[in-house]
Length: 313
Image (tube, rainbow, N blue to C red):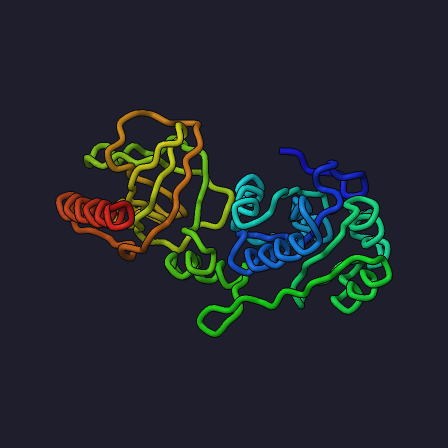
């Protein structure tokens, strides 16, 4: 996955298009609305005008304030670029937020990135868009620069659900409270957690419910048990019952992500597994004995299987 030099020429197929710029973490319904507006503008400008989404990797905060811990992302870069293409971008590219780029004034950023780099014919952004050093450029600034440069600008209104704007912050809050169904509404798809399968305690195997233990770099939902769709390394998809959080019955603290892949037999250690969270089944619990735990695991698997069948006919 290539992260482009933001001050160099972009690939030819990304030039002379309609551009939208942002971090786009989650690639949610608000971002889909931006890209929808960009597609409308591209059609109006003529045949063959591409829609280009430009994101940043890493987040600018990691460059400006490396001493501060950054919030866990909702999407890793490959998933973010794929999602941006799925929701309307012809081309999705990532640029590095170098100190040189972040030090440009709003006018310099506009000329170096949008004019020289992308040769943009149109730009679409939301009302809160800011750019340039210290986020000094606003939509009013962008409007003036586009008018002077002969570039058409469209301001896309924010998307609201349940009376509040959809945002990455709102999605993060839903996941941190375990409301994966709300997160899916804001995203327009189930939340996906991707990770590498690591060696665990093999405790689930002794209980009759072997699990794949994931090491994850994106935001993990609140502790609980969830029904999920699991995409295996070979691309096949299976239902899964996923336990997130500590294991109080065994006195194990700390964050664990353990997925029982229903109907799967085999080993996938060291490979990548993706989980799409469908619904929350229950809170974590401490069980008095092995028999009570096994019975609860059986019910969890039945409910995860039922959720799968409800969504897959």
